[in-house]
Length: 171
Image 1: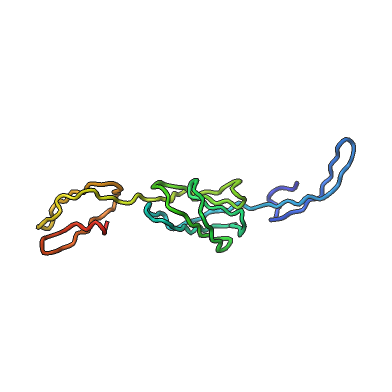
Image 2 (image 1 turned 180 degrees about the vertical axis):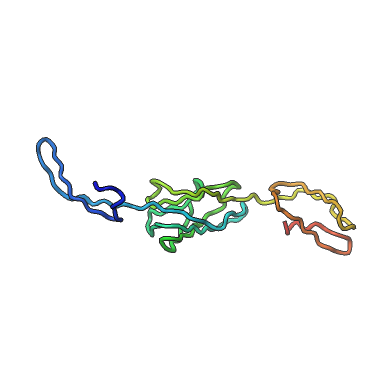
């Protein structure tokens, strides 16, 4: 075989095979599938409560074939929209909160190219209690109890005639 660097997407080779002093001649067709290259993806995150979401993957050598597979970690995209050899759109169902590498294969998952950066599925914020429920002074301290809080989360309060009331829908 010639070096892989000289292969095109489809190469034909003549060959000679000798078995038990008998010569056999023929040609062999080999399909070489270039590995995909992932240069970026967006968005960088999704929320765990989203029923469906998509990830746009850009790079090189994506093939419009049934062998094209897109994954977040070990989770397969349920649909892949081939846009070009440099762009695919991968659709996923709800995933558990975690971080995942974006992975793409052109050959039915025999091997994958994956990113060095992580896609994050963020846990939905759950507020289980607020104390106090009503405050009458600006700057009052309010305590929240729950799960899924992360850096950068902001609380929104509504002003009404009784004072400030916590608005759970705006977290």
